[in-house]
Amino acid sequence: MIVYHGSKVIVEHPDVLHSRMKVDFGKGFYVTPLKEQAINLCNRFLKTDNSAFISAYKLNDTVFTSKEINFLRFETYSEKLLQFIIDCRTGTDNSNYDIIMGGVANDKVFDTIELYFQNLISASAALGRLIYEKPNMQICIRSQQIIDDYLTFIGSEQL
Image (cartoon, rainbow, N blue to C red; front, side, top):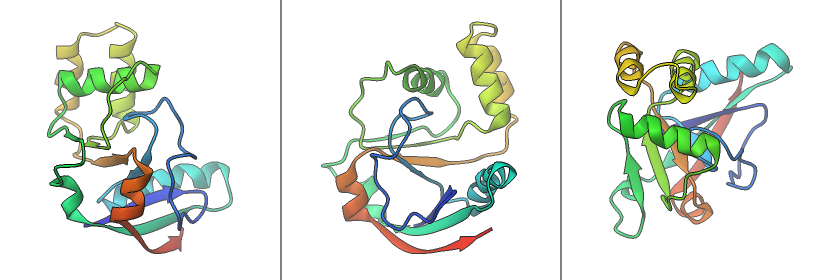
């Protein structure tokens, strides 16, 4: 599977050390199989910085079926996904997942999650809003060993 990472710099050697802590799926290296999604992220960087890059990688698909890897996948927006994102964003997630895959909290999704997080709307109201969102996907690799063993840098392009 080819995956993409949008950044202010070329990321030839990804690592989990440079990740922020309180984000959707916790500290890790984030990629997406949707190039358009990585481009949209880069467009945010271009508003404040002079450059943005999309780095491409080959992610070995066996990572998703290996018995040694603790993998969590959210197929759809769900109450479980909302709670997981809130736990990660508040720093209360204690899970030991190596890889997490699911929908990304883009601006509209983020706004809905924030309303839910602040107890301004219920989980069912939040999920009712999210079913209309365009599908997207993010993969968070939380283990450096998995990055080293399953992710291979292909190249990058500047936007």
